[in-house]
Amino acid sequence: MFGKIKNFAIKKVIQSQMKNVPADQKEMIMAMLEKDPTTFEKIAKEMQA
Image 1 (cartoon, rainbow, N blue to C red):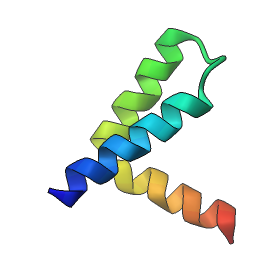
Image 2 (cartoon, rainbow, N blue to C red; image 1 turned 90 degrees about the vertical axis):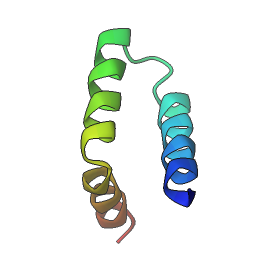
Image 3 (cartoon, one colour; image 1 turned 30 degrees about the horizontal axis):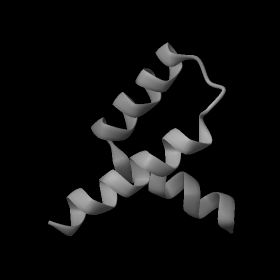
Image 4 (cartoon, rainbow, N blue to C red; image 1 turned 60 degrees about the vertical axis):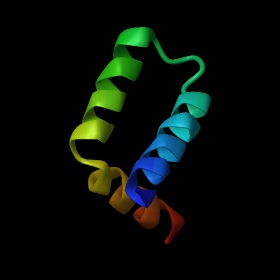
């Protein structure tokens, strides 16, 4: 249950950060996120380090 809530929250944050990104690129990024969300979590952790 919490996994779905977490994924929803992550999607909303990403969408808010991609206001000026073309629609086709948004769709591509969201598809990658749905396919493998752990990759984006790893990227975020590396950026914070």
